[in-house]
Length: 238
Ligand code: DGL
Image 1: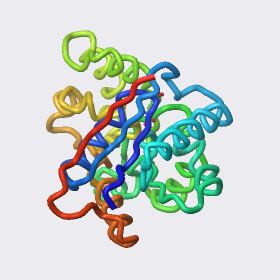
Image 2: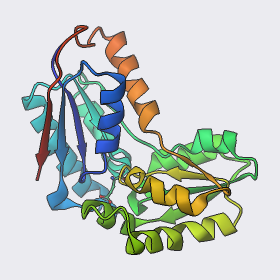
Image 3: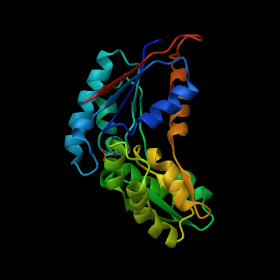
């Protein structure tokens, strides 16, 4: 039960998901792999991402992880089916853009989704839109430049704000009142995104919902850490 929860992402983006899990589950230890050497994943072919993802899962299992969070929308789109069939005994939690809650919440009937090309190409995303956003206009915005900003740690300042404005303004002009952060790098730019969208749109980040899903799965399987355990957090960067 006191084995760690594993996370991986193409870089530091998924730390927002890990941090949401730590807030909700303070007794749980974590191991996080930031594959910065191979970042970005956004434009890579799915087979390549799947090969990288399998390597990360193998490594996380060597650390004894009891559950793996694919803390990357792009890697989830490309690889989660393969990971689940290769390791049927391991619980996996993936990420997908929060299109369903956005469609339910929108009053204008227009939502903007910010994600990578790979996420938009994925079956999961297309199916979610078809099922839950039939009566909603979903505007897709590939914001790969945000990934580079976040990897450099450039989440404030004039250049970052200009990049955010360039992506967000057209969505707002088209009537979007909800902006979905469909890439785990983007919550790191949330203060800037909220500044630009202030009074016009609200921002949806699924990190807390993912943390609740982790808690649900661990609890169902009797894998929650013993109450009062002292957690440790390991960070590995390629
Ligand atoms: N953080 C990843 C995601 O959630 C992708 C960033 C990248 O392109 O590497 O989609």
